[in-house]
Image (cartoon, rainbow, N blue to C red; front, side):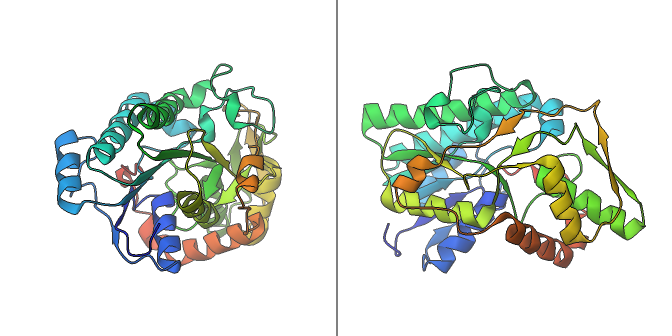
Length: 321
């Protein structure tokens, strides 16, 4: 991937999209194209085609998606399945039709069976039932991976897919209703500290284990794979280690300075018991994680403090189409 190539980052306002732009810029890529949802509605096929015809990007990072945590998945199942299917179908097909050299599609560990063996190898996909709390999002992401594989087989289109683990970091969504677990915990503990509360309520039992990755680390892996990998099989992106939600909460509390207690609301779902990806394929391709979890938490909280006032106004824009 030449540094002079025109690169379109779809979903540039989302967590992953922002990180991709930071990392591309750091590596000397200057011709980066972005559009807001107001400029191009990615669920509208004609708008997407007009955009590609006008800009003619050489490479596409598809980081555009309707995203959110357990609560958002439960409340907006139609948005999660229909929105994601429309976005990815329009981007993948139009990229091929427009002569894009290469496309990278971002999947999710949600695509894995709820009770998949740990760590999860890439070939475990579609070997068992999905986790019900995020099945709508998972089905759409599975379709996206299969679409990339189909276009590679039938048309020779160089579309690759990656499956990142749980992500957090600079630019995250800290909205209580729609955020993922890492950002939600950080926001709760910060607000409790500021208000003087001695208690933070955490959904579930705190026992599920999650592999959690700083988003700039993951973005670096995506760029590496765009530069060095071309194959039908999707590639797991992770750190190769996991942590219980309870222990992760304690780490965040230390960084934030919250000294109160945790109360676990066991009436709320835990979600998948464990999520840890097998990163052996990624390691064999020559990449491994560079930023540890504690450092990522510290960077994220520092950014949160600098941007706190603006983050409190987030609402529907948390859905990063």
